[in-house]
Amino acid sequence: LAKITDVTEKKQKEEKINKLLSETLVYNQKLEVNNEELNKLNTELDGFVYRVSHDLRAPIASTMGLVGLAKSENDINRVREYLDLQSQSLKKLDAFIQDILDYSRNNRQELQLESINLFELINEQIAQYQFDIQKNQIEITNSIDPQLIINSDARRLSVIFSNLISNAIRYSNNYIDDSYVKIVAEKIQDYLLISVADNGIGIPDEYKEEIFKMFFRVSDSGKNGSGLGLYIVKETTAKLKGTVEVISIAGKGSTFLIRLPNNPV
Ligand code: ADP
Image 1 (cartoon, rainbow, N blue to C red):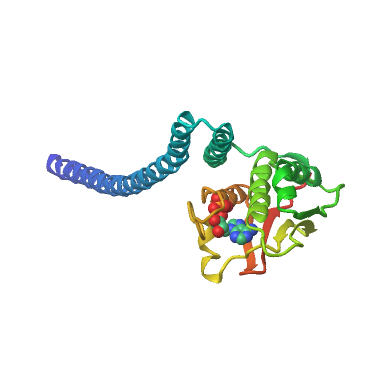
Image 2 (image 1 turned 120 degrees about the vertical axis):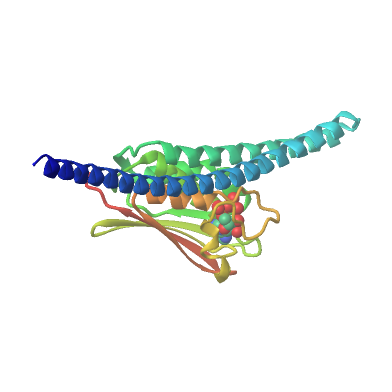
């Protein structure tokens, strides 16, 4: 009997050890996957920091150059020109920092649902760009029903529409004199469809997917921009459980469609 108990005990011990071993194996595999993911994140973060530092330093370098020029200039009108250029560089810097803040806020902050008058929220965003709208002679219409109340996150919606409106203005067509931006919203069953349409320069087919990627810009010439705007729009819309897509014809114009869940108010 003693022998049988002995064998059973031995077997139980063996089983225990085997179980522990296989658990350790699974655990190690998980660690390996986590490690790989961490390495990947680290490389991505590295690339991000490199790119951001580069983009932050460019307007600083330009401002410093202009300060140097202004210092040795006696003609007050030239000095004023240098100051204007400096303020443009600083604006660029400020806009870039704002984009990075919007990006990180969207990742960190919980959703804050509240009742929102979408017509007014969009008007506030349009007001920010009054200067550029007048300068480029763009007719901007907000056709959203002023009675429409939606349940969403006001801060995130502001980020989304501020980016889309600013793009529609910046990428307007300089060769036509009836530039417009039209904003429309409609409730369709369980979702809300909001469109921002322009008759600007449009986006070539091959770039329609690319424009939503971090730092992607169709062309660097002239227009200021960080290449973060539409990436932020995509991430922020996703956080609201919505989608964004673009319909565009190069040379004719673009329409950005935002689909959001129609949460009960
Ligand atoms: P950027 O800071 O360059 O504007 P975005 O991420 O907002 O960055 O946009 C990425 C690119 O998509 C822009 O550089 C531009 O080439 C293109 N784009 C965005 N919006 C429009 C638009 N309304 N019309 C034409 N091109 C656009």
